[in-house]
Image (tube, helix red, strand yellow):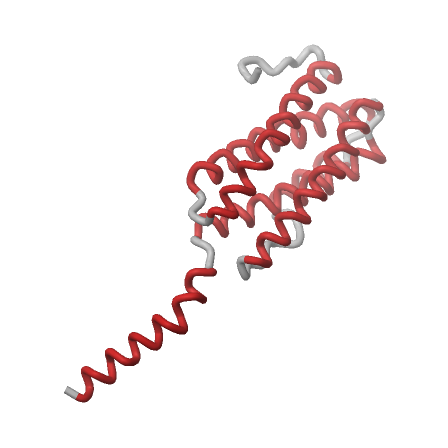
Length: 179
């Protein structure tokens, strides 16, 4: 009888002291969202800073500056949200994202502009929109869900801007079915 009482007391103490800490932990899917969102934003900022120096078309440089500015603001908000949830997101893009940037970094002339807009403007934003849509629907933490929902309209706008820009920097390659 005494062992059973001790087990019950241990369970009660664990729930009392462990419960709040457990409640503050993010679900695995929410952590994965924050990790991917952080890496995506950092990759877009890095490639866009590169575009500021390499792009020939002023419209591409303007788009790149907008991506640097807006994704930096979102990253700051993401970092604050993550800290409040006791989670530390990555501080740099993934290895795959770094590799993609290296590939475009070595391009010259207008091929850089086309590849940057296609890869970091269109493809990256299509992926990011899907990521944020899923989090807006499925995130378990209400703050994570609100963050995803809040930033979806801007990401969709970035995607549409990139698609339009793609048509101007590479008119021979329009993006069919994406509008």
